[in-house]
Image 1 (cartoon, rainbow, N blue to C red):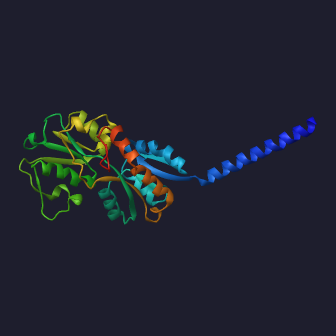
Image 2: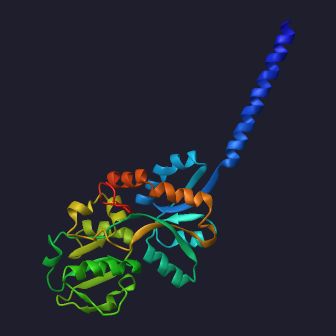
Image 3: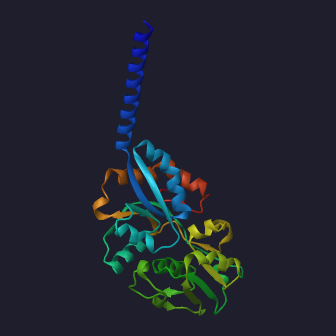
Length: 276
């Protein structure tokens, strides 16, 4: 009787293991991995925040953090990544033009308002003649920088110039003879500002926040919310409609995630949706 009972238990235990293994195998088969490149702040942070929700939906995020603006698109175009999350729309458009690329926008997520910081003046309009303005070498941002100074009444832009493609050579009038120095790596700008270099330094929100700066309270001018410079999920054209990419974008654009972005970054990084 004991032998018979032990045999039954052994059979049941084996069946349980087989069912468990089968279930685990089926579960793993349902998971899709997205290899995605991202800037450290806030992009990778936002991706890590939504990763648990995506895992519930069968999508596993494998995040690679990049420290520059050059490699993420190269890696995506070469097939090393399935998507990336670090750039705004004008940046993607310029990259495609210059590299004969076909990368596409799969969906907008947030806005990083660019801001002007200064240890010399308290308002943009207080800049003196001949003041030096330090900006990054990231040419797709030049239009938004010029917009800040144009809106402050300090410069005008040549007629017919598309602002998202504008350069400093497109300045029509500059009565105060402001000097725009634009040969600096974006990641160096917070340090340059803290060292007191130049009369003003223009810093993108991701680098400002990463360096502990608060554009809302410390900047002398901040980009308006109504801007074409929305940070996006980029992917290859043929992958845009893949279910896993669509799930990623949907979770990032959800009201829940958009609210989290606003509150986590205290308004220094703005969700694409106007939620609070």
